[in-house]
Image 1 (cartoon, rainbow, N blue to C red):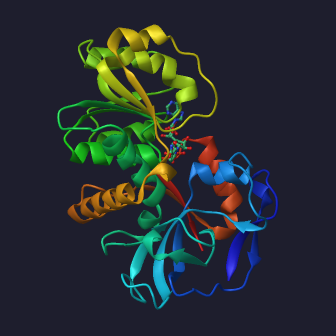
Image 2 (cartoon, rainbow, N blue to C red):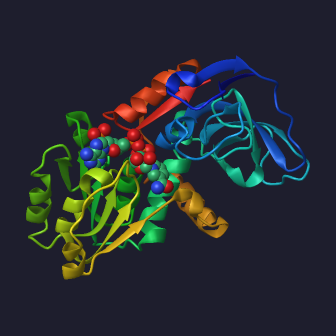
Length: 319
Ligand code: NAP
């Protein structure tokens, strides 16, 4: 089978497509024929060597969707031929096939394409965790999704909309802002325009927002704190460096700043998130948006694209 292999940390070009042996599942494993691979920013951080050591060579990738090809005898909940999506694997998802443990494999409804299925695991798991496990988002609250045109942000808009929150959402392009309006955001702003924070205060009659999900805290956190309601909660999802804040902004309105890391979810929390994702896919409130499909061999191009921003939705590789 073909797989994207990494022999050393470095720029996107260290990813090479190679022929490797088809893996054989043990009793508690599942072999998947991959139809689409979700590209996440974390794949690029791992490839660049920012997330600790790896045993080389390795195959990149966390998210994918496909069809079950072979099932170990101890696995009960999936059948050969079943459409599934995965988040996490034993052998890496940038490949034509991959091995998974049973708990990494989830049923994919017929109304969701394989590319959309590949957009679920990390983005929707993270958005759910931020909104409903790190804070307890509830109908009527005002949520500010700061960086809403990407994989996690769009998932958060859809979850928040379904839960009855009011939504302020940002994108850096006209196309992204149009998409966010179509997704049901109540106010859409451009995060590259410095004055957008004033518009958040105007829209909330000076009260500020109850919940803020931040995709680029190193740029925005200091100003984020100035648009929070009393006892408002900021959840940091993404950050690419240090940032200066004024702690008086936190004190004066008793703001909470929380971080989230999807990999720290417990098994019970993951089960809760996947149940919510399944419910949303089935009732139509969740529907992943695909920005671009590229062949698996163009994984390096996908890594450049995801770090350059300005894509609306998810970048997907097709084996
Ligand atoms: P993505 O698809 O590449 O989206 C990136 C988003 O950031 C886009 O909406 C982009 O908007 C927006 N953005 C760009 N400049 C911004 C600015 N100045 N202020 C606010 N937003 C800005 O990535 P993703 O998968 O959604 O992930 C978003 C971030 O969360 C990444 O940093 C990722 O590493 C992180 N993340 C963390 C976890 C976790 O567990 N903590 C899990 C998943 C992802 P435009 O392109 O429209 O400008």
